[in-house]
Image (cartoon, rainbow, N blue to C red; front, side, top):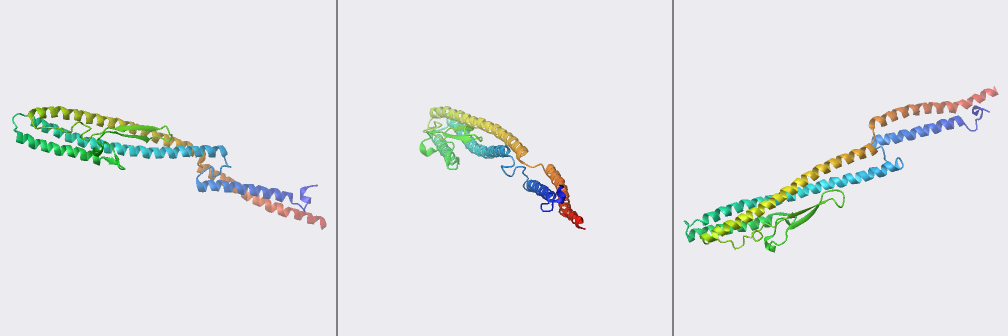
Length: 280
């Protein structure tokens, strides 16, 4: 018997309704994607894709934080380099004064005045060292602790636990540079002072060189992190983000199917009325 003759269960209408429900569900899914901009809004839509996207997101966020850490490391190195450079300028002045005091044409009084000036410059070196800090960390020494231990820090420069860069900054206070007790009382003392200050200048120059090398590494790490972050986000986007052109195309197609499903349902609901013609 044809389904049309069975009016107790309108099978055609049930099938049309089921098709309409499925079309409405698909439209809702695609509209949700358009609203959120994501192809995967639930793990049930693509379990493997969801897991991969979350792993990539975790890596991307770790890389972004590592970039911030690199920026902090650069700030620390810039501060340290500024301190070293200021000390270098003072050392150059001290060497000039020592060279002046080494001249036998000066008398003791004049050398005493120069020595007093050099003493103030040495105090200024220690002040610079004490003021060269970052978050209460003394970067190039602390004149109050005797200048025994260099600053050492491990900067987290990647999203992995092993991605670290160790940085060591040498002490640059007057004691660490061997300038304690520097005397210009006599021409001979001044000559010895010239050699002592020259050695200190070489030490600070080497310290500045080390900072420069650290900064070169930091710049390279920053470039690498930027590239990794961009590529990671590109992969995650290709997996998780919605293609708006494709989604809108699907919605348009499904809306047409929705209209035909509604029309079919209406027709299927009215079709059993044909049975009434048998009773005429």
